[in-house]
Amino acid sequence: MMIVLDAVSKWYPTGDRPALADVSAEIGTGEFVFLVGPSGSGKSTLLRLLLREERASAGQVLVAGRDVARIPDRRVPRLRRAVGCVFQDFRLLPNRTVAANVAFALDVVGRPRHVVRSVVPEALELVGLREAAQRYPDELSGGEQQRVAIARAFVGRPRVLLADEPTGNLDPATSLEIMKLLDTIHRAGTTVLMATHNASLVDAMRRRVLELGDGVLIRDEADGRYDQTVPQPIAVPAQSAGDGGVDSGVDSGIGIGGIGGIGIGIGGIGGVGGGVSSPWAPPVRGAVG
Ligand SMILES: Nc1ncnc2c1ncn2[C@@H]1O[C@H](COP(=O)(O)OP(=O)(O)OP(=O)(O)O)[C@@H](O)[C@H]1O
Image (cartoon, rainbow, N blue to C red; front, top):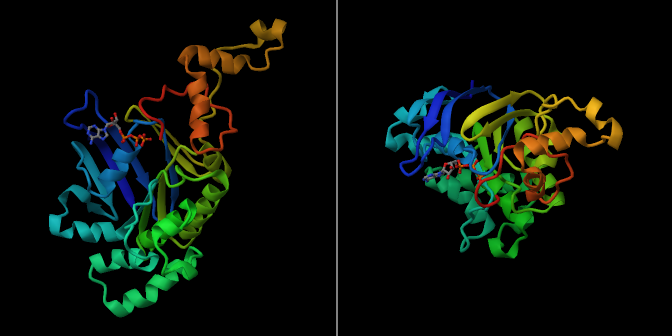
């Protein structure tokens, strides 16, 4: 197993409920897994635990067989070399060139210069940006910046790539390009865990889906979609006979949650929408994205 979460809970000091509650899951080496759930459901918290940016309040987090909480502070950089990450807001250094941004990841972990000089162009080649090596982030489109961020995450050949909403700031076509790139990296043998609100991408890829709701793991589905396919909670045929009843099922779901419009909004965050929202989706809290 590349990632093991064993009864993991996380309370933030200021929180009135746990950000993660008794989450257990295993992700095998070489798997591609989507992590979904509404805003505030705990996705970023889970990723932060894997990077040791936060520590679990209870339970165990293992990455590549190591108990992350027990890694001595001086070894945390080594963990972060084994675990590449990509974020919604790219997080590039604005005053460094593209090549320097990618090289920075290696400089930090003390790779020799000749190694840096050979692998940085390779990583830029992988993301199709070799020609942009000497440009600065603000001279690139959002999609190009995200590709630089992926090159930076991948240049150290991590065993795991974590992506926190990597398409959140991108249009649908660009999002698809980024998705393909992550898929390529996955096919090269990297374990990928991608937190996303992008329903179209999840539905198109049909990979394993882990879903969080209020910090609880509520779904672990192979070949899943963004929304769980569940039997309708209320039987509709008899009552729908008089009015056509085409969307009676959805109506009944909305009645239960009272949040149909917000459900549709989840699909829209990635700018693509299109999918039918989950009739039982819990309400979105706080700011979108
Ligand atoms: N540093 C923090 N201090 C206190 N509470 C926090 C902190 N970070 C997150 N939380 C809370 O923990 C819960 C889970 O947040 P988290 O950011 O993990 O959710 P998320 O699913 O990643 O949301 P989004 O999709 O909006 O990024 C939320 O209730 C949030 O308010």
